[in-house]
Image (cartoon, one colour):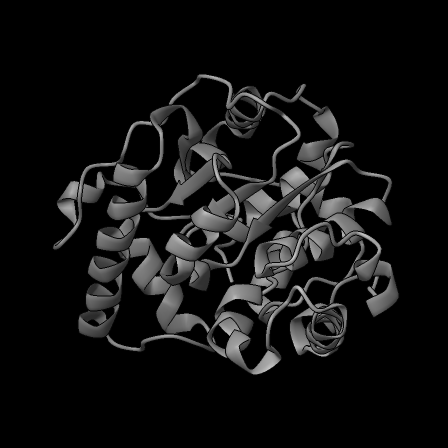
Length: 276
């Protein structure tokens, strides 16, 4: 999952100072247009995507659940479900989706019938939209966002299913990402392997940036989220066409269990504190 909000951190440096890195991509402050569109949070694992998603989920209009892994889990297997224009095939797919580990960890939990009433289409994108809409509706929210770091590998499919959906990219100093990865319960455990993963990720996000319309791509740094969380969240809200909500800074008061590793969970239960 994404990065954490530690009590202290190392001093950030430009990504260009990291072997294989590129300079941080400048985001746009321009609103993304239709503020009812779903949005996607992209970022390398351990880069701060969990922190941002928890903050945005506190917004009264926005629902951002824990990682869904919908594309990485089900897209390779869609052929086994047959033509999704058939109602029973869609029902079979939805039943399997809500039974997966990631979805069973969501609170409030979803049942298949709650999702099916939100399906308005006969493709996988319509099913994904229904899952997310159903979860948002259970919280009285009108708009959803999705964050699963592994979905960077499926962006071509996602962008085809959700045309003109805004992208928020979270980037963190690559050296800090490597340190966090090596301490996590998943991912590479040597500097060399971390560097390879980091370089691959930068190549993937560069492709997304090049294909995404400029007004629909916004970048924030993990360091900015720590140093000036309020201003960063205001800029994210401007990009999404939403009104800033102060309660986003109270993300750590959310008592709903968050499925992540122990260290990340502990840090997400703390306010953002930066110690020089």
